[in-house]
Image (cartoon, rainbow, N blue to C red; front, side):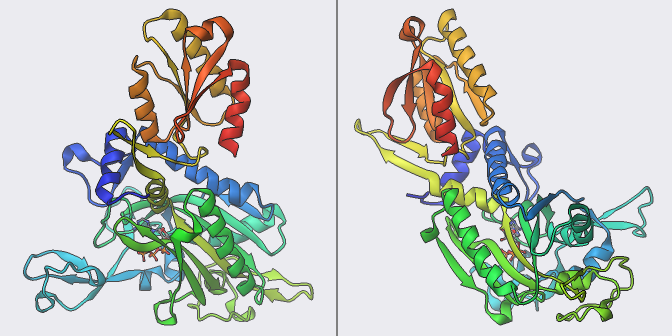
Length: 448
Ligand code: ATP
């Protein structure tokens, strides 16, 4: 049972150290959040799961980590300077500003100004002179620098088409109305794949990627039945897109986009290419007077072809929120008590195992527990912690709430026979296991 409302998740995130308001001690900065000790682990685990599924499991996909500061020409030719804007209205009654499609009910239509286009890109000054003559954009998506590096990657890796470039990184959008916790923020991370295919192969590839992405979300604990496919109607499509399927998830605040999977045609490589008129580009692109690279490949007959692009683009924060929401359970216990448990997939859990000595001041138990922690940490599955609160019940509750799949308790029997108690997060069942078998147990549990 997912959370009843966003407040429950926000409260858990703050209480346990997943997410904090950014610059909180100075009143915050709207649309920005900081990921705390557990948040950074969960976020990294989500990103690693994506990277593994994309780059390590597919030999036709390569990784990239491009700069955030972006030459304005990139975003000029991509169309962002002209079209990456949202309609904005002012309410004359309350004095606030809204995205035209997100005006709250309290504002009356007659109080609203005519919508004006507002460009969402952040600009920053580059170099020592602050007179606007030299600026860069903070990238509004990671995709564009994948396109500008198309030739670099293909030439250095000798990949034939079809092949893809994957990237995870920050993106910045000056959203008019950031809201709904980390759902809509001004600084966020994207996980983007640009998969290049020959024209004619694009529709099949698009369908395949929609299925592959649903499978991936399912493996992260967001089941396919919780996702609706939205086939974006022609009038809502971005200028570069021939077809877009949005994966819509029922967030605590409503059904909204988790990921978009677009068929971007030959628009991107066509836009960034030199000698465009020799390339038979199908999309309508701006004449490029600056690029020094021909963004095309030769087909079997030697003809130059601009590949089409299929783009699955997911937000890390939205994924974080969906995964947290799906894993959040409030359970009634026998003694009229309740427990909160995060049933996270073990590979995503911020803490993989907690090792707890039965008595916090007993040197032998503490030493034994520390040794187990150190040994398990070496396997490299993620964070294992030594937990020495002295209250086993409280430790179990805490680890239920942060999604630790297993607690390992070290007691006096451990000192005698080398066995420990394993306590399972989901079933709360306890069983004894030899210390020597812990490594294999954990490897199986986490890599499941
Ligand atoms: P929306 O319509 O919700 O503004 P979008 O269609 O502009 O989103 P895309 O440009 O398709 O979003 O970006 C790809 C992904 O990046 C989205 O599916 C989402 O997960 C994430 N994303 C986009 N904007 C934001 C934001 N302001 N905050 C958090 N994540 C975002």
